[in-house]
Length: 561
Image (cartoon, rainbow, N blue to C red):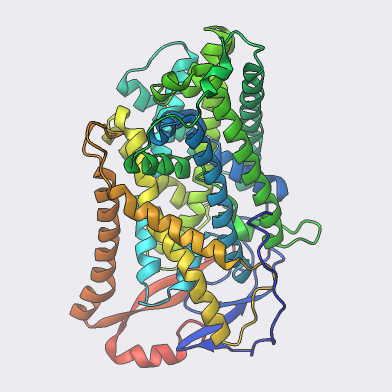
Protein backbone atom coordinates (compact mmCIF):
# COMPACT_ATOMS: atom_id res chain seq x y z
CA UNK A 1 0.00 0.00 0.00
CA UNK A 2 1.37 3.42 -0.94
CA UNK A 3 2.61 5.57 1.91
CA UNK A 4 0.99 8.49 0.08
CA UNK A 5 -2.48 7.07 0.47
CA UNK A 6 -2.82 8.41 3.99
CA UNK A 7 -6.10 8.84 5.82
CA UNK A 8 -8.94 10.88 4.36
CA UNK A 9 -11.01 12.60 7.03
CA UNK A 10 -14.54 13.89 7.24
CA UNK A 11 -14.81 17.68 7.25
CA UNK A 12 -15.69 19.16 10.63
CA UNK A 13 -17.92 22.10 11.39
CA UNK A 14 -17.39 25.04 9.05
CA UNK A 15 -15.01 27.54 10.69
CA UNK A 16 -16.02 30.98 11.82
CA UNK A 17 -15.34 33.91 9.42
CA UNK A 18 -12.37 35.18 11.44
CA UNK A 19 -10.86 32.29 13.40
CA UNK A 20 -7.94 32.81 15.74
CA UNK A 21 -5.48 30.48 17.41
CA UNK A 22 -4.20 32.02 20.60
CA UNK A 23 -3.05 35.54 19.70
CA UNK A 24 -2.64 34.65 16.03
CA UNK A 25 -5.24 35.73 13.50
CA UNK A 26 -6.12 33.59 10.47
CA UNK A 27 -7.15 34.73 7.01
CA UNK A 28 -8.93 32.83 4.24
CA UNK A 29 -7.29 33.19 0.84
CA UNK A 30 -7.37 31.46 -2.54
CA UNK A 31 -5.01 31.63 -5.48
CA UNK A 32 -5.70 31.22 -9.18
CA UNK A 33 -4.81 27.53 -9.36
CA UNK A 34 -8.39 26.32 -8.74
CA UNK A 35 -7.59 25.21 -5.20
CA UNK A 36 -10.28 25.95 -2.59
CA UNK A 37 -9.99 28.90 -0.25
CA UNK A 38 -8.12 27.88 2.91
CA UNK A 39 -7.02 29.56 6.12
CA UNK A 40 -3.47 30.41 7.04
CA UNK A 41 -1.87 32.40 9.86
CA UNK A 42 -2.09 36.05 8.86
CA UNK A 43 1.60 36.74 9.47
CA UNK A 44 2.49 34.37 6.62
CA UNK A 45 3.26 35.71 3.15
CA UNK A 46 -0.01 36.49 1.30
CA UNK A 47 -1.48 34.17 -1.30
CA UNK A 48 -1.05 35.69 -4.77
CA UNK A 49 -4.48 35.89 -6.42
CA UNK A 50 -2.90 35.39 -9.81
CA UNK A 51 0.54 33.80 -10.02
CA UNK A 52 2.96 36.20 -11.73
CA UNK A 53 4.80 33.11 -13.01
CA UNK A 54 1.67 31.84 -14.77
CA UNK A 55 -0.08 28.46 -14.62
CA UNK A 56 2.06 26.20 -16.78
CA UNK A 57 2.42 23.12 -14.57
CA UNK A 58 0.31 20.10 -15.48
CA UNK A 59 0.57 16.34 -14.78
CA UNK A 60 3.49 15.76 -17.17
CA UNK A 61 5.46 18.69 -15.77
CA UNK A 62 4.85 17.53 -12.19
CA UNK A 63 6.27 14.10 -13.03
CA UNK A 64 9.30 15.44 -14.86
CA UNK A 65 10.04 18.26 -12.42
CA UNK A 66 10.60 15.52 -9.85
CA UNK A 67 12.28 13.03 -12.17
CA UNK A 68 14.58 15.64 -13.72
CA UNK A 69 15.78 16.80 -10.31
CA UNK A 70 16.13 13.30 -8.83
CA UNK A 71 17.81 11.64 -11.81
CA UNK A 72 20.83 13.87 -12.12
CA UNK A 73 24.22 12.54 -11.18
CA UNK A 74 23.39 10.60 -8.01
CA UNK A 75 22.70 7.19 -9.53
CA UNK A 76 25.74 7.60 -11.80
CA UNK A 77 28.16 8.90 -9.17
CA UNK A 78 27.20 7.62 -5.69
CA UNK A 79 26.98 3.79 -6.11
CA UNK A 80 30.68 3.46 -5.25
CA UNK A 81 30.43 5.26 -1.89
CA UNK A 82 27.12 3.58 -1.05
CA UNK A 83 28.51 0.10 -1.72
CA UNK A 84 31.68 0.92 0.23
CA UNK A 85 29.68 2.29 3.14
CA UNK A 86 27.21 -0.56 3.41
CA UNK A 87 29.94 -3.17 2.88
CA UNK A 88 27.83 -5.60 0.85
CA UNK A 89 25.78 -5.75 -2.32
CA UNK A 90 22.67 -6.93 -0.48
CA UNK A 91 22.65 -4.10 2.07
CA UNK A 92 23.38 -1.52 -0.62
CA UNK A 93 20.25 -2.65 -2.51
CA UNK A 94 18.21 -2.37 0.69
CA UNK A 95 19.58 1.18 1.12
CA UNK A 96 18.45 2.11 -2.41
CA UNK A 97 14.96 0.78 -1.59
CA UNK A 98 15.03 2.66 1.72
CA UNK A 99 15.67 5.86 -0.19
CA UNK A 100 12.41 5.41 -2.07
CA UNK A 101 10.51 4.68 1.16
CA UNK A 102 11.93 7.80 2.84
CA UNK A 103 10.96 9.88 -0.18
CA UNK A 104 7.40 8.54 -0.17
CA UNK A 105 6.96 9.12 3.56
CA UNK A 106 8.37 12.64 3.35
CA UNK A 107 6.05 13.37 0.41
CA UNK A 108 3.11 12.26 2.57
CA UNK A 109 4.06 14.88 5.19
CA UNK A 110 4.39 17.52 2.47
CA UNK A 111 1.02 16.57 1.00
CA UNK A 112 -0.86 17.25 4.22
CA UNK A 113 0.85 20.63 4.50
CA UNK A 114 -0.13 21.34 0.88
CA UNK A 115 -3.76 20.44 1.60
CA UNK A 116 -3.76 23.24 4.21
CA UNK A 117 -1.95 25.76 1.99
CA UNK A 118 -2.68 24.68 -1.62
CA UNK A 119 -2.02 28.08 -3.20
CA UNK A 120 1.44 28.70 -1.77
CA UNK A 121 4.57 27.73 -3.66
CA UNK A 122 7.90 27.19 -1.92
CA UNK A 123 7.17 23.96 -0.01
CA UNK A 124 9.18 23.85 3.24
CA UNK A 125 9.45 27.64 3.30
CA UNK A 126 5.69 27.81 3.81
CA UNK A 127 5.41 24.83 6.14
CA UNK A 128 7.95 26.18 8.64
CA UNK A 129 6.43 29.65 8.44
CA UNK A 130 2.99 28.29 9.36
CA UNK A 131 4.16 25.69 11.90
CA UNK A 132 6.45 28.02 13.86
CA UNK A 133 5.12 31.62 13.86
CA UNK A 134 6.91 32.20 17.18
CA UNK A 135 9.49 33.48 17.98
CA UNK A 136 8.35 36.09 15.51
CA UNK A 137 10.38 36.05 12.27
CA UNK A 138 12.70 33.33 13.63
CA UNK A 139 12.01 30.41 11.32
CA UNK A 140 11.30 32.51 8.21
CA UNK A 141 14.56 34.41 8.79
CA UNK A 142 16.84 31.48 9.62
CA UNK A 143 15.42 29.28 6.87
CA UNK A 144 15.66 32.10 4.32
CA UNK A 145 19.30 32.78 5.20
CA UNK A 146 20.09 29.06 5.04
CA UNK A 147 18.50 28.86 1.57
CA UNK A 148 20.52 31.86 0.39
CA UNK A 149 23.81 30.56 1.79
CA UNK A 150 23.19 27.01 0.55
CA UNK A 151 21.64 27.85 -2.82
CA UNK A 152 24.83 26.53 -4.47
CA UNK A 153 24.73 23.17 -2.66
CA UNK A 154 23.58 20.81 -5.41
CA UNK A 155 24.54 22.91 -8.40
CA UNK A 156 28.26 22.94 -7.63
CA UNK A 157 28.82 19.18 -7.43
CA UNK A 158 26.40 18.44 -10.29
CA UNK A 159 28.24 20.96 -12.45
CA UNK A 160 31.50 19.15 -11.69
CA UNK A 161 29.96 15.81 -12.70
CA UNK A 162 28.58 17.39 -15.87
CA UNK A 163 32.12 18.50 -16.76
CA UNK A 164 33.61 15.07 -15.97
CA UNK A 165 31.15 13.25 -18.21
CA UNK A 166 31.65 15.77 -21.02
CA UNK A 167 35.37 15.10 -20.87
CA UNK A 168 34.65 11.34 -20.80
CA UNK A 169 32.56 11.83 -23.95
CA UNK A 170 35.60 13.41 -25.58
CA UNK A 171 37.72 10.48 -24.43
CA UNK A 172 39.99 12.48 -22.17
CA UNK A 173 40.41 13.62 -18.57
CA UNK A 174 40.18 17.32 -17.83
CA UNK A 175 42.48 19.22 -15.51
CA UNK A 176 41.04 20.76 -12.36
CA UNK A 177 40.67 24.20 -13.91
CA UNK A 178 39.26 22.82 -17.14
CA UNK A 179 36.61 20.97 -15.13
CA UNK A 180 35.78 24.16 -13.24
CA UNK A 181 35.51 26.18 -16.44
CA UNK A 182 33.24 23.65 -18.15
CA UNK A 183 31.07 23.39 -15.01
CA UNK A 184 30.65 27.18 -14.96
CA UNK A 185 29.86 27.25 -18.68
CA UNK A 186 27.20 24.57 -18.24
CA UNK A 187 25.54 26.41 -15.36
CA UNK A 188 25.61 29.67 -17.31
CA UNK A 189 23.73 27.98 -20.15
CA UNK A 190 21.17 26.78 -17.58
CA UNK A 191 20.73 30.35 -16.32
CA UNK A 192 20.09 31.61 -19.84
CA UNK A 193 17.62 28.77 -20.48
CA UNK A 194 15.37 29.68 -17.52
CA UNK A 195 15.79 33.45 -17.22
CA UNK A 196 13.68 34.62 -20.17
CA UNK A 197 10.51 32.49 -20.28
CA UNK A 198 8.89 30.33 -17.60
CA UNK A 199 6.72 28.20 -19.88
CA UNK A 200 9.54 27.38 -22.29
CA UNK A 201 11.86 26.49 -19.40
CA UNK A 202 9.31 23.90 -18.26
CA UNK A 203 9.08 22.52 -21.81
CA UNK A 204 12.86 22.20 -21.96
CA UNK A 205 12.95 20.53 -18.54
CA UNK A 206 10.29 18.02 -19.64
CA UNK A 207 12.10 17.21 -22.88
CA UNK A 208 15.41 16.58 -21.12
CA UNK A 209 13.53 14.63 -18.46
CA UNK A 210 12.27 12.23 -21.13
CA UNK A 211 15.84 11.71 -22.36
CA UNK A 212 17.07 11.16 -18.79
CA UNK A 213 14.36 8.61 -18.10
CA UNK A 214 15.11 6.81 -21.36
CA UNK A 215 18.82 6.67 -20.50
CA UNK A 216 18.19 5.10 -17.10
CA UNK A 217 15.69 2.64 -18.60
CA UNK A 218 18.32 1.67 -21.16
CA UNK A 219 20.88 1.03 -18.39
CA UNK A 220 18.33 -1.02 -16.42
CA UNK A 221 17.39 -3.18 -19.42
CA UNK A 222 21.02 -3.61 -20.42
CA UNK A 223 21.78 -4.72 -16.88
CA UNK A 224 19.09 -7.40 -17.06
CA UNK A 225 20.59 -8.61 -20.34
CA UNK A 226 24.01 -8.79 -18.65
CA UNK A 227 22.61 -10.72 -15.68
CA UNK A 228 20.98 -13.13 -18.13
CA UNK A 229 24.42 -13.92 -19.58
CA UNK A 230 23.81 -12.37 -23.01
CA UNK A 231 26.76 -9.96 -23.08
CA UNK A 232 30.56 -9.92 -23.17
CA UNK A 233 30.73 -9.78 -19.35
CA UNK A 234 31.98 -13.13 -17.98
CA UNK A 235 30.04 -14.76 -15.13
CA UNK A 236 27.87 -11.74 -14.18
CA UNK A 237 25.87 -13.70 -11.59
CA UNK A 238 29.04 -14.44 -9.62
CA UNK A 239 29.03 -10.86 -8.40
CA UNK A 240 25.81 -11.56 -6.49
CA UNK A 241 27.11 -14.64 -4.68
CA UNK A 242 27.07 -14.14 -0.91
CA UNK A 243 25.31 -10.80 -1.38
CA UNK A 244 25.49 -9.87 2.30
CA UNK A 245 29.13 -10.77 2.72
CA UNK A 246 31.06 -7.79 4.03
CA UNK A 247 31.36 -5.52 7.04
CA UNK A 248 29.37 -2.36 7.66
CA UNK A 249 30.36 0.25 10.22
CA UNK A 250 28.13 2.94 11.80
CA UNK A 251 30.11 5.61 9.96
CA UNK A 252 29.88 3.71 6.68
CA UNK A 253 26.14 3.11 6.73
CA UNK A 254 25.52 6.72 7.77
CA UNK A 255 27.58 8.11 4.90
CA UNK A 256 25.82 5.64 2.60
CA UNK A 257 22.44 6.92 3.80
CA UNK A 258 23.59 10.49 3.21
CA UNK A 259 24.46 9.55 -0.37
CA UNK A 260 21.07 7.86 -0.74
CA UNK A 261 19.26 10.97 0.50
CA UNK A 262 21.35 13.04 -1.91
CA UNK A 263 20.58 10.68 -4.81
CA UNK A 264 16.83 10.96 -4.17
CA UNK A 265 16.98 14.72 -3.64
CA UNK A 266 14.34 16.41 -5.76
CA UNK A 267 11.35 14.14 -5.05
CA UNK A 268 9.72 17.29 -3.61
CA UNK A 269 10.38 19.64 -6.53
CA UNK A 270 6.73 19.79 -7.63
CA UNK A 271 5.76 21.14 -4.19
CA UNK A 272 7.87 24.20 -4.98
CA UNK A 273 5.49 25.26 -7.79
CA UNK A 274 2.11 24.50 -6.19
CA UNK A 275 0.60 27.88 -7.07
CA UNK A 276 1.56 27.38 -10.73
CA UNK A 277 -0.36 24.09 -11.12
CA UNK A 278 -3.31 24.39 -13.48
CA UNK A 279 -6.56 22.50 -13.00
CA UNK A 280 -6.61 19.22 -14.93
CA UNK A 281 -9.77 17.09 -15.17
CA UNK A 282 -11.17 18.80 -12.06
CA UNK A 283 -8.13 17.78 -10.00
CA UNK A 284 -6.76 20.42 -7.63
CA UNK A 285 -3.01 20.73 -6.89
CA UNK A 286 -3.11 18.31 -3.95
CA UNK A 287 -4.72 15.54 -6.00
CA UNK A 288 -2.35 16.11 -8.91
CA UNK A 289 0.81 16.05 -6.82
CA UNK A 290 -0.42 13.00 -4.90
CA UNK A 291 -0.97 11.01 -8.09
CA UNK A 292 1.90 12.19 -10.25
CA UNK A 293 4.39 12.66 -7.42
CA UNK A 294 3.85 9.03 -6.39
CA UNK A 295 4.37 7.90 -9.98
CA UNK A 296 7.69 9.78 -10.20
CA UNK A 297 9.07 8.43 -6.89
CA UNK A 298 8.06 4.80 -7.53
CA UNK A 299 9.45 4.95 -11.08
CA UNK A 300 12.79 6.33 -9.92
CA UNK A 301 13.08 3.79 -7.07
CA UNK A 302 12.58 0.81 -9.38
CA UNK A 303 15.03 2.16 -11.96
CA UNK A 304 17.65 3.01 -9.32
CA UNK A 305 17.63 -0.54 -7.98
CA UNK A 306 17.82 -2.03 -11.49
CA UNK A 307 20.65 0.34 -12.43
CA UNK A 308 22.68 -0.79 -9.42
CA UNK A 309 22.02 -4.41 -10.30
CA UNK A 310 23.46 -3.56 -13.71
CA UNK A 311 26.56 -1.94 -12.22
CA UNK A 312 27.30 -4.86 -9.91
CA UNK A 313 26.75 -7.43 -12.66
CA UNK A 314 28.96 -5.72 -15.24
CA UNK A 315 31.60 -3.89 -13.20
CA UNK A 316 31.93 -6.20 -10.22
CA UNK A 317 31.78 -5.48 -6.51
CA UNK A 318 35.41 -4.50 -5.94
CA UNK A 319 35.74 -2.45 -9.12
CA UNK A 320 32.51 -0.64 -8.31
CA UNK A 321 33.77 0.22 -4.83
CA UNK A 322 36.82 1.87 -6.39
CA UNK A 323 34.99 3.56 -9.25
CA UNK A 324 34.69 6.98 -7.60
CA UNK A 325 32.10 9.10 -9.39
CA UNK A 326 32.25 7.41 -12.82
CA UNK A 327 30.38 4.15 -12.16
CA UNK A 328 28.28 4.55 -15.29
CA UNK A 329 31.35 5.00 -17.51
CA UNK A 330 32.88 1.76 -16.16
CA UNK A 331 29.56 0.02 -16.80
CA UNK A 332 29.47 1.16 -20.42
CA UNK A 333 33.10 0.17 -20.98
CA UNK A 334 32.51 -3.28 -19.48
CA UNK A 335 29.46 -3.97 -21.64
CA UNK A 336 30.29 -2.21 -24.91
CA UNK A 337 34.08 -1.74 -24.80
CA UNK A 338 35.77 1.56 -25.50
CA UNK A 339 33.79 2.56 -28.55
CA UNK A 340 32.02 5.62 -29.88
CA UNK A 341 28.79 4.20 -28.52
CA UNK A 342 30.22 4.58 -25.02
CA UNK A 343 31.08 8.19 -25.74
CA UNK A 344 27.49 8.75 -26.85
CA UNK A 345 26.15 7.19 -23.65
CA UNK A 346 28.44 9.42 -21.58
CA UNK A 347 26.97 12.36 -23.46
CA UNK A 348 23.48 11.24 -22.41
CA UNK A 349 24.59 11.24 -18.77
CA UNK A 350 26.07 14.71 -19.24
CA UNK A 351 22.67 15.75 -20.62
CA UNK A 352 21.09 14.20 -17.53
CA UNK A 353 23.34 16.36 -15.36
CA UNK A 354 22.36 19.44 -17.35
CA UNK A 355 18.67 18.62 -16.90
CA UNK A 356 19.23 18.23 -13.19
CA UNK A 357 20.83 21.67 -12.98
CA UNK A 358 17.83 23.06 -14.85
CA UNK A 359 15.30 21.44 -12.49
CA UNK A 360 17.31 22.50 -9.41
CA UNK A 361 17.36 26.13 -10.52
CA UNK A 362 13.61 26.11 -11.30
CA UNK A 363 12.68 24.74 -7.88
CA UNK A 364 15.29 26.58 -5.83
CA UNK A 365 14.30 29.95 -7.32
CA UNK A 366 10.68 29.42 -6.19
CA UNK A 367 11.84 28.68 -2.65
CA UNK A 368 14.10 31.74 -2.58
CA UNK A 369 11.29 33.89 -3.98
CA UNK A 370 8.91 32.65 -1.27
CA UNK A 371 11.52 33.48 1.36
CA UNK A 372 11.66 36.97 -0.09
CA UNK A 373 7.86 37.29 -0.02
CA UNK A 374 7.96 36.82 3.76
CA UNK A 375 9.90 40.07 3.96
CA UNK A 376 12.78 38.73 6.02
CA UNK A 377 15.49 39.19 3.38
CA UNK A 378 17.00 42.56 2.44
CA UNK A 379 15.93 44.13 -0.87
CA UNK A 380 12.49 42.50 -1.08
CA UNK A 381 11.89 43.61 -4.65
CA UNK A 382 15.01 41.73 -5.83
CA UNK A 383 13.53 38.44 -4.59
CA UNK A 384 9.83 38.94 -5.34
CA UNK A 385 9.56 40.90 -8.58
CA UNK A 386 9.14 38.91 -11.79
CA UNK A 387 9.98 41.79 -14.13
CA UNK A 388 10.99 42.07 -16.91
CA UNK A 389 10.44 38.50 -18.22
CA UNK A 390 7.81 37.18 -15.76
CA UNK A 391 10.50 34.96 -14.23
CA UNK A 392 12.16 35.02 -10.75
CA UNK A 393 15.30 36.62 -12.18
CA UNK A 394 16.71 37.78 -8.83
CA UNK A 395 16.83 34.27 -7.28
CA UNK A 396 18.22 32.86 -10.54
CA UNK A 397 21.09 35.38 -10.51
CA UNK A 398 21.91 34.75 -6.85
CA UNK A 399 21.94 30.98 -7.40
CA UNK A 400 24.28 31.37 -10.37
CA UNK A 401 26.57 33.82 -8.54
CA UNK A 402 27.05 31.72 -5.40
CA UNK A 403 27.53 28.55 -7.43
CA UNK A 404 30.24 30.30 -9.46
CA UNK A 405 32.09 31.27 -6.28
CA UNK A 406 31.95 27.75 -4.82
CA UNK A 407 32.98 26.09 -8.10
CA UNK A 408 36.26 28.00 -8.01
CA UNK A 409 36.70 27.91 -4.22
CA UNK A 410 36.56 24.15 -3.58
CA UNK A 411 39.09 21.58 -4.84
CA UNK A 412 37.50 19.62 -7.67
CA UNK A 413 38.38 16.22 -6.23
CA UNK A 414 36.75 16.66 -2.79
CA UNK A 415 34.01 19.03 -3.89
CA UNK A 416 31.44 16.39 -4.77
CA UNK A 417 31.59 14.39 -1.52
CA UNK A 418 31.83 17.47 0.69
CA UNK A 419 28.99 19.40 -0.93
CA UNK A 420 26.81 16.29 -1.23
CA UNK A 421 27.08 15.74 2.54
CA UNK A 422 26.75 19.45 3.31
CA UNK A 423 23.57 19.52 1.20
CA UNK A 424 21.95 17.03 3.57
CA UNK A 425 22.94 18.13 7.08
CA UNK A 426 21.28 21.59 7.47
CA UNK A 427 18.32 20.37 5.40
CA UNK A 428 17.87 17.46 7.80
CA UNK A 429 17.50 19.92 10.69
CA UNK A 430 14.72 21.84 8.94
CA UNK A 431 13.05 18.67 7.65
CA UNK A 432 13.02 17.34 11.21
CA UNK A 433 11.31 20.54 12.39
CA UNK A 434 8.82 20.47 9.51
CA UNK A 435 7.75 16.87 10.24
CA UNK A 436 7.33 17.64 13.94
CA UNK A 437 5.66 20.95 13.07
CA UNK A 438 2.83 19.16 11.27
CA UNK A 439 1.44 18.23 14.69
CA UNK A 440 1.57 21.90 15.70
CA UNK A 441 -0.39 22.91 12.60
CA UNK A 442 -3.03 20.28 13.39
CA UNK A 443 -3.27 21.48 16.99
CA UNK A 444 -3.62 25.14 16.02
CA UNK A 445 -6.31 24.35 13.48
CA UNK A 446 -8.33 22.41 16.05
CA UNK A 447 -7.87 25.30 18.49
CA UNK A 448 -9.17 27.77 15.90
CA UNK A 449 -12.19 25.62 15.08
CA UNK A 450 -10.93 24.89 11.56
CA UNK A 451 -11.85 21.62 9.91
CA UNK A 452 -9.42 18.79 9.44
CA UNK A 453 -7.86 18.42 6.02
CA UNK A 454 -10.35 16.83 3.64
CA UNK A 455 -7.75 16.62 0.87
CA UNK A 456 -5.10 14.49 2.55
CA UNK A 457 -4.12 13.39 6.04
CA UNK A 458 -0.88 11.59 6.83
CA UNK A 459 -0.70 8.52 9.05
CA UNK A 460 0.88 9.08 12.46
CA UNK A 461 3.38 6.27 11.84
CA UNK A 462 4.62 8.04 8.71
CA UNK A 463 5.16 11.33 10.57
CA UNK A 464 7.01 9.58 13.40
CA UNK A 465 9.18 7.72 10.86
CA UNK A 466 10.11 11.07 9.26
CA UNK A 467 11.01 12.58 12.62
CA UNK A 468 13.20 9.61 13.55
CA UNK A 469 15.01 9.32 10.20
CA UNK A 470 15.95 13.00 10.20
CA UNK A 471 17.01 12.79 13.83
CA UNK A 472 19.30 9.91 12.81
CA UNK A 473 20.76 12.06 10.03
CA UNK A 474 21.56 14.77 12.58
CA UNK A 475 23.07 12.57 15.30
CA UNK A 476 24.87 9.67 13.60
CA UNK A 477 27.33 11.65 11.42
CA UNK A 478 29.25 12.45 14.62
CA UNK A 479 30.25 8.78 14.78
CA UNK A 480 33.85 8.74 13.45
CA UNK A 481 35.28 6.22 10.96
CA UNK A 482 36.51 3.03 12.61
CA UNK A 483 40.24 2.56 13.16
CA UNK A 484 41.98 1.86 9.87
CA UNK A 485 39.05 3.10 7.80
CA UNK A 486 39.32 6.27 5.77
CA UNK A 487 36.83 9.10 5.44
CA UNK A 488 35.32 9.93 2.09
CA UNK A 489 37.26 13.22 1.85
CA UNK A 490 40.96 13.99 2.21
CA UNK A 491 40.38 16.32 5.19
CA UNK A 492 38.69 15.79 8.60
CA UNK A 493 35.57 13.62 8.23
CA UNK A 494 33.39 15.98 10.31
CA UNK A 495 34.13 19.13 8.32
CA UNK A 496 30.72 19.13 6.65
CA UNK A 497 28.98 18.69 10.05
CA UNK A 498 30.78 21.66 11.58
CA UNK A 499 30.21 23.70 8.42
CA UNK A 500 26.51 22.84 8.49
CA UNK A 501 26.21 23.80 12.15
CA UNK A 502 28.16 27.00 11.49
CA UNK A 503 25.69 27.91 8.76
CA UNK A 504 22.76 27.29 11.11
CA UNK A 505 24.50 29.32 13.85
CA UNK A 506 25.17 32.16 11.40
CA UNK A 507 21.49 32.18 10.45
CA UNK A 508 20.52 32.33 14.12
CA UNK A 509 23.03 35.13 14.77
CA UNK A 510 21.65 37.12 11.83
CA UNK A 511 18.17 36.77 13.32
CA UNK A 512 19.32 37.88 16.77
CA UNK A 513 21.10 40.97 15.47
CA UNK A 514 18.49 41.99 12.87
CA UNK A 515 15.29 41.31 14.84
CA UNK A 516 16.38 42.04 18.43
CA UNK A 517 19.76 43.73 18.98
CA UNK A 518 19.59 46.55 16.42
CA UNK A 519 15.88 47.39 16.99
CA UNK A 520 16.43 47.53 20.78
CA UNK A 521 19.43 49.79 20.25
CA UNK A 522 17.69 52.08 17.75
CA UNK A 523 14.28 52.18 19.51
CA UNK A 524 11.94 50.49 17.06
CA UNK A 525 10.24 47.16 16.36
CA UNK A 526 9.88 45.28 13.09
CA UNK A 527 6.46 44.87 11.50
CA UNK A 528 5.18 43.57 8.15
CA UNK A 529 3.64 45.75 5.45
CA UNK A 530 2.02 44.37 2.29
CA UNK A 531 3.44 45.54 -1.04
CA UNK A 532 2.37 45.00 -4.64
CA UNK A 533 5.33 44.57 -7.00
CA UNK A 534 3.33 44.47 -10.25
CA UNK A 535 2.36 41.59 -12.55
CA UNK A 536 0.44 40.04 -9.66
CA UNK A 537 3.56 39.72 -7.47
CA UNK A 538 2.86 40.43 -3.80
CA UNK A 539 4.82 40.14 -0.61
CA UNK A 540 5.61 41.67 2.75
CA UNK A 541 8.26 44.21 3.47
CA UNK A 542 9.50 44.38 7.03
CA UNK A 543 9.35 48.00 8.16
CA UNK A 544 10.67 49.81 11.25
CA UNK A 545 7.93 51.09 13.56
CA UNK A 546 8.96 53.48 16.41
CA UNK A 547 8.13 52.07 19.84
CA UNK A 548 5.53 54.79 20.46
CA UNK A 549 3.54 53.72 17.41
CA UNK A 550 3.70 49.91 17.76
CA UNK A 551 0.33 49.52 19.52
CA UNK A 552 -1.48 51.63 16.91
CA UNK A 553 0.24 49.76 14.07
CA UNK A 554 -0.74 46.35 15.43
CA UNK A 555 -4.35 47.50 15.87
CA UNK A 556 -4.80 49.07 12.45
CA UNK A 557 -2.15 47.89 9.98
CA UNK A 558 -0.99 44.47 11.11
CA UNK A 559 -1.36 41.35 8.92
CA UNK A 560 -5.01 40.40 8.51
CA UNK A 561 -6.28 43.93 9.34
